[in-house]
Image (tube, rainbow, N blue to C red; front, side):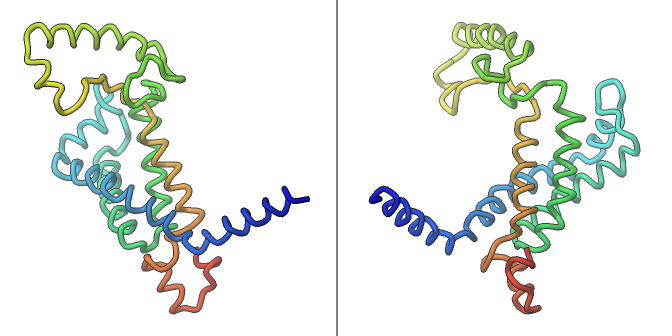
Length: 205
C-alpha cells in the first residue's frame, strides 16, 4: 500500500540523521558544563559557609562528616565540569555527579516539592507554591507603589524561588542519559582513546 511505502521512505530519511547522533551527547555535555562549574566554584569560594550549612541540624542540612561531604561535592562538580567539557571519562564521572544530584534533591530540596520556581498554575503546585501567589502579588503592589517598577522589571519579571527538586532531577536525567550513551563520537576524548585502543564504538560507550 502507498501509505506503507511513504512510511518506509520517511523512516529511511530519519535513519540518515543517525550519522549526526554525536550532537546529542555533545549538547547534553555542553549544557551541563557551566552549571556544574559555577556550582563548584560557588562552593569553593564560600567553602567554610558550605561546610557549616552541610553540618548544621537547625538551619542546614544536618549531614554527617560535613567537611568531607562539602569537599566531595565541590570537587565532583568542578572535575565533572572539566570531564564533560573534554568528553573524558564521561560515563565514569556521570556516576558521582548523579549521586550529588540525588543528594541535593532529597536533602536540600525535597521538602519544597517539585517546582524550582513557584507557579500556582503548575501541575505539581503544592500548598507552599499556592500560598506564594498572594505573597508575590503583595510584593508587586508594594514595588509599584513605592519603587520604579518599570526599571525594576526591565531585566525580567519578579518570581518566587520555590527551590524544589525540579532542577536537580532534570540534571540527574541528563546525566543518566550520558551514562548510557557515553560522550559521543568524534568530539570527545573518550571516542579517540577508544579508537586508538581499537574498541568498537558500541563497546567504548
